[in-house]
Image (cartoon, rainbow, N blue to C red; front, side, top):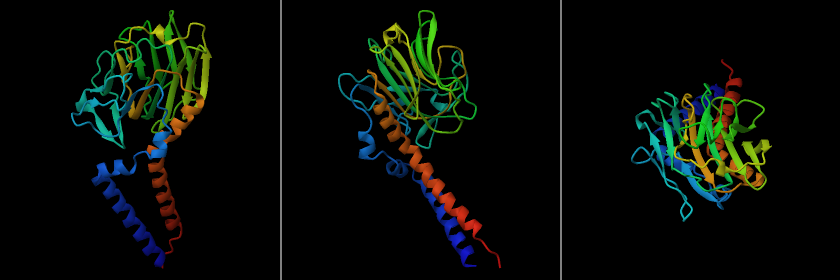
Length: 287
């Protein structure tokens, strides 16, 4: 009987915790905010855009660039805000529509966000839905002659110029409903394009003409919408950062570790609670 009472207490505690988290989203965001140590792990040199999707903006659409200084670019703008859902400290992309008829959630990034740059790094903390679709973000325009993008269904980053795509591709597909830290790097000095998953370099290619300046027309830059008439992205995004330089592998590893704390700590806490509940259930003896 004592064990059953312990189970009841644990159950009530879990229910109270769930109700508290649901009723106090602002306080929850504060609790789960990155610590000073985690913030320090985010490289600052070359950072020109840092967009957080942890909270719904006051006007429902303006995603403020938290980077200041002369090199910082403008804010991002959420499109089709009526379809937007904000949960788990992230923006949920509905996946409705296609690029030619974008009825669902997508984000417009500033024009010429990397205009005149030769090297760059883009990182994103993302949870694809179980129905993993293609394009996650795109730098370029409404045409398909030149662009730089990241794909989730066939996990890769590609840049197109000279009539063909140059691609750094992961060897395995991504799982749906799981958080990932994905990073793409163009390094004009080494002539390389690299792709990272959770801070680990999984692919790198080299091309003698590799430079971001190949994508000179950057009039339509997006999260969730492709230059091709593909379905819109479906899933959740919590952070999106843009650098005007090639980050090192060590910097990307540190950034991925810091970003993973936002959702990693949360799910680890839930997992520990469920483990404790499971142990209590196994110990039940009915008399």
